[in-house]
Image 1 (cartoon, rainbow, N blue to C red):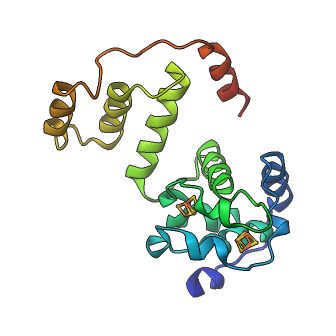
Image 2 (image 1 turned 120 degrees about the horizontal axis):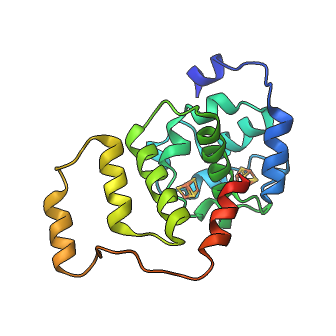
Image 3 (image 1 turned 90 degrees about the vertical axis):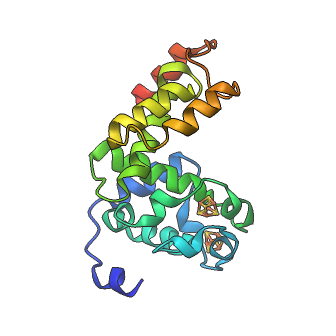
Length: 183
Ligand code: SF4
Ligand code: SF4
């Protein structure tokens, strides 16, 4: 945190960020820094910013610091922090908003494999309305250039019927695509 604090800059996008968070029902300005979110996070030891620090930096509008931190990309979206917050702040959604904004702005410079997985997962949802594992994994392998290391595992999963060659169709895929187009 010390190194990051030294790099604090004058926030330029603060109001824009706070507005998008409010629209996502995640009003970070309600935080009183009790620390319950950080204390409950199961992967906080791998973060460079604790969840409570993410919330505070959002209030400062320090978006670049946040999207360059490992925390935003390593968050497992388990929502433990969200359920523990006494002020009802949806911290997991804060992480979602930060990832989404970073991808839209092309501001992703760290954890390339996590970002590749994130894009492949969202691409699968956009195209099929649900995760199509074969397509998602193929997208991930192409994005990372790692074509063979998990081939054995993939074949084993296929043999056990855990992944399919063709996607299942669901209703409302057009609506899902239009939701993606709105952002
Ligand atoms: S639990 Fe809620 S109020 Fe407490 S520090 Fe985390 S975000 Fe802030
Ligand atoms: S949603 Fe992310 S930040 Fe919150 S507890 Fe889970 S891993 Fe930690």
